[in-house]
Structure formats: C-alpha cells, structure tokens
Image (tube, rainbow, N blue to C red; front, side, top):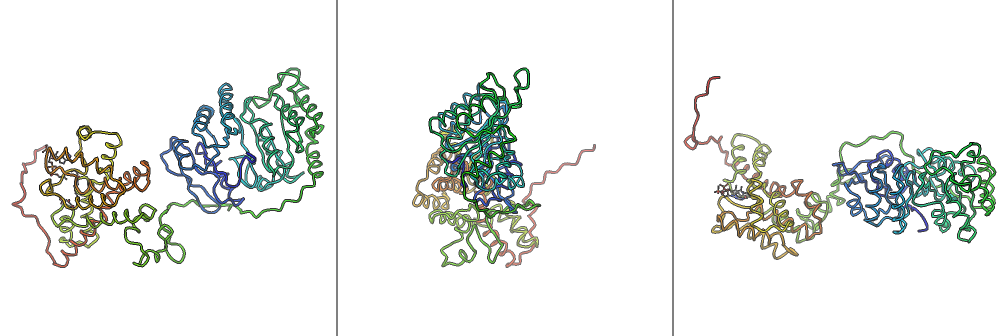
Length: 600
Ligand code: ACO
Ligand code: LMR
C-alpha cells in the first residue's frame, strides 16, 4: 500500500458518534469529495435504519447496521474501519473485523485496552496485512482526500493548518494533540502535509513509526518526513536502521519529546502509557543524539524545530502547490422533517425514481401500470415477467362480487349517502386477517416453515401451537370440489413464467395435508399471492432480509388493497347509479338475545 487513504476511501464507522461523523462529512464537503467518507455506521443497540447528517447545506442518510458483518456486506467497498468502541469492546470489534476481512486499515480510538490483548490484536492484523492506527489515537489524515473523525480539529483549524489539501510532508507522531500542533507549524514553515498519522500513545500500538515511514517512502506525494517521537520505547532505532540500510532515502526531520526527563531524579511517566524510559537508550535525549548521528535532521530543541522544517523544505525547492477550490460549510443549517426516496416534484417535471412522468405515462413509453408500481413501491423496474405478474395479481383480485365482506360494507356505506372516499374506506377497513389481508401472513409463515425445513405436519403443529389459522389456507365457498380458478390461473402463470417456484411447491404439499382434513382448506388466493411474491423476489435476487422488510411493512396486502379498490369503487358507483335507498338489515335476520340489565 503506497497511500493510507485516497479521495475514494470510505469507512465503516463503529459507534454512532454523531459529532465525529459530522466533522468527517463537513471535511468531505469542504474538499469537494464526491462520496461521503463514511459509508455505514455500526450501532448495535439502535433500532434505526439510518442517521441523517449534513453534507454542506443538504442532508445525506448514512445506513445504520447492528453488526460489522452486515455493514461490510452492504458496503463492501468501505475498506477502513473506524473503531470508536469503548476500551471494553474495542478489542472484540477489531478481532471480528479482522476475521470478516476486506479492510485495508483500522483505526482504534480506545485508550486502555489490556496490553496482552493489544499485542495479540496487533500481531493478528500484521499477519493479515492490515494497517492498524492506534489504539489510543485521534487517527490519521490524507489532506484533500480523507480525514479520520476529529483529527485536525474544526474546519477552521483544518483550513488554517492547510489540512484541506495535500502538501509534501509525511508526518508521524504519537500524540494527537501534538499532531495538530505540528501540522500548524508545518503549514507555516512549509507547504503542509501529504499524509499524517498519530500512531497513538499506548505502549503497544498497531503500526509503529517505521511502518508508516516505509509506506510514506513509497508514497510519491510525500517528499520528506517528520517524525515526532517521545521518551520511552525503542521504535526510533528501527527508523535509524532503515536509513542506514537504504530503505528510507527521503529526508527525515525528527525530534523526541521528553528531554525534560533528565531534570527529574527518578524515571517519569508522562501522559501516554508508553511515555516512560526503562533504559538510558529509551530517553528522549539519547534517541535524539542517535538520530542526529544517523543523518536525520534533529534540531537542538523543540523550539528550533520550525526553523529546521523551514530549512529542509526550502532546500528541497518543491514547486508551489496551487490552492484548490473549496466549499464553505454554511454557518447555520436546518434538519429536514420528512424524507422521500421515491419521487421528486422539484424542477420542471416530477420524477418517479428518476423517471420523468412523461417518460412512463403514455403507451409508447413501454411502461405499464405494473412498471410504475414496481418503481414507486420497490424502487426498481422489474423484468417483464415480474411486472406482468404484479398486474395479473391486481386484475385477479379486482373484485369478487357484492357478497364479500369489503364490497358489502362499501355498498352499505354508499347507500347511507356517503361519498366515494368514505364508502371506499369503509370497504378497505374490512380487509384484514380473514378477508384479503392474509397475504403478508401467508408469506411470513410459509417462508418460515420452508426456511426451517418443517414438514407439512410439523408446520401445522407449529401453527396450532401459535393458536392462529394458517394465513392463506381456507375459503368460505371454494374447495377441492369447487376450485378457485383465480388460484389456478396465478399458479399457471408462475409455472410458465417464473424461473422457479420453490415456496409454491412447498405450499402445495401443505395444502395436500389440510385438504385431506377438510376439503375447503385449500391454498386460497391470498396465500397463493403471498407465496408467489416470495418466489418472485427470490428470483429477482432479493435477500431474505430484504424480503422480510417488505413483509413487515405490509407490502403484500397492499396488492389486494390496490386491486380490490377497483372493485369497491365499481360497487359504490353502482349504488350511486341505481340511486339505492338507505339499507336497513331485516330484523328477522337478527337473533335478539337481550336480558334485562342487572341493578348495581
Ligand atoms: N388453518 C387451519 N384451520 C382452519 C383454517 C386455517 N387457515 N381455516 C379454517 N380452519 C378450520 C377451522 O379451525 C375450523 O375447524 P373446526 O371445524 O375444527 O372448528 C374449520 O376449518 C372451519 O373454520 P371457519 O373459520 O368456520 O371456516 P370458514 O370457511 O368460515 O373460514 C376463512 C374461511 C375465514 C378464510 C378461514 O379459512 C381462515 O381464517 N383462513 C385463514 C385466513 C385467510 O387466508 N384469509 C383469506 C381468505 S381469501 C380472501 O379473503 C381473498
Ligand atoms: C375475495 O376475493 O373477496 C374472496 O376470496 C372472499 C370470498 O369470500 O369470496
């Protein structure tokens, strides 16, 4: 890997840390990235499906997942894990992501992961070729391309420190605070940085100085490197070694913080867990001298570092970097109350999922009502066989005569003088688990039984235990002897046009058993539709999770609702046309069994 991040890099952000994510998106907008740098968020305890963030003046939705595996499966291109889990779970989160694979780098922010675990984790990552930044870090940045969470601070700080576009320095520090300090110094004394990493303050961090410097040596954007080490550890000696053996050829400027330690009587533990010298060779002074001897540019004190940077940079004669165009994040923004992902009525002509109405409305467009339904309901234009099936369903359930529950209610309401809408709603309100609204239930239960390899007998037993009639089975007037020809028609269409019908085939074996008990316990029209929709969606490549979302939303009953509205409206218009008087049910058709009320 030559570059840690590019302008296309996308991350999976573990933990819904809204402020940090917003900072990343503000950065993206400022540098005019085409895609948000965060592709998904892992939020194990959230029931939400997405989180809204500002992208400049507008808002974008970033999907939320309960697990890293789900997030990675949905956003496979996101190859950076930003692990913002607490120190209690950061290890498990990293190990799981290493197991899932497909990540080129991971950043771990938690401080205080037990050292034994951290060593094992870093070793596993190294074996798998994954660059780990941290633990205990603010992360890394490739200016003008990708910035981890809070590194560099606010947008104002970032622009002031020239972190909005690539400069020529490769910067590696341990500390995040000093990283920001140094980027500012570099922006004043040179032309900014090309890639910067704060490797983290723990004793055992994943990628160490040498790993980052060797990558920067290969990165053509990096012209020289600055290393800000600190008292404690021996990692600086690996850099000296790499210079000696010619692995690092670009100029290196370095300074080790903590020279003050010599003024204390005994060993001092500085803020970072790793910042304490256990031997003379681990002191800042010793390391500074050793680096100087190896030809690294080491100033006499931290105060002299800016001048040293300026000198090395000036001597390199690097061409001026043109300032890129930038967006300005608006000072005040308002979050939107509603979200719409299916149609857009702004502009000259409204669109259905990107199709202007004029491109779908008239016959020569080739769009039928089924096409429009598939794009508005499922946001995809289905192939002809599937669109034809949707339309076959609508036509099949459009009406079933005046005696069925819903049509009866619509007729009674119309005769009470109510308008079309009220009468239609009265009819629609009748659709439910017994009448027309068993489609989702049928899909759910038959899919469950089939997925779990239940035999028809086991399925019946399972449903009996749950205490509900099997949705999609049974009819008041249709039976083996008086078959429902609508069902026959739907099955015929599916057999001739679907790539395969595994769930229907299973349902027919269940029907064999139920009709052997009672001949009207046939697979009814609701059941056939629900089951065939699952077969259709599977053939169209939907995952089980996606199909479950449709079922949970009630999308299947919606086909009956839409289709039967045609019939209900027909019956209502029929009543109006015939100017039928108000209906009163004959009293002799009611069993009155009213006792005298008891006295309190
Ligand atoms: N699963 C198991 N047993 C059933 C089912 C079923 N789906 N449907 C009826 N039975 C049994 C009943 O338990 C009852 O048994 P019992 O005689 O031992 O008491 C017997 O069959 C008769 O039951 P009823 O409810 O009187 O049957 P009816 O013919 O009146 O009901 C109905 C028809 C309401 C459709 C019923 O079969 C049912 O609830 N089915 C499930 C829901 C459903 O699929 N509805 C959609 C129908 S199609 C449409 O509306 C477009
Ligand atoms: C319908 O389509 O309305 C029915 O199958 C219900 C019925 O009783 O006919």
